Image (cartoon, rainbow, N blue to C red; front, side):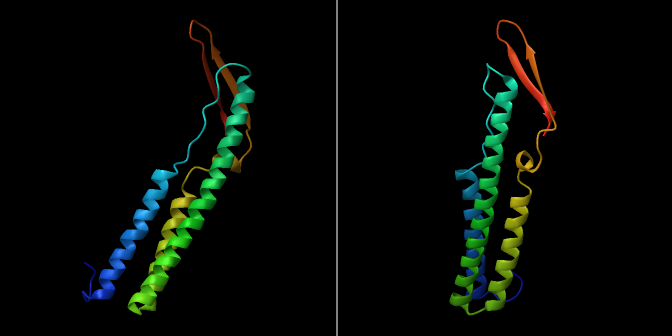
Length: 139
């Protein structure tokens, strides 16, 4: 329980915090960031560049959706707290902390594919019955 009075406002604050956390966790579970694997066969460099382009697009979309959703959910929770408990100070603190946490979560997710171009890309092909293809480089 929070430090201080154990009243309806504190309980509402706990429920709103739990709901905001549940929304954030559900967003990552429902829409995880999926990075494509280059297709085998054909030109390995072209396949890797295509996979990198798709990864960059998905990383951008994920960043925008997660940041927008985090701000929206936290503002909605803050408005609910302010209206329901008439404690706008606590509501503002809830929004400020929630948006900060959502921003940190968003800015620590993968986004290297769209920040830097491929500096070097080297395909490695290991011949045999089941050929293996690997791509190395700095992304």
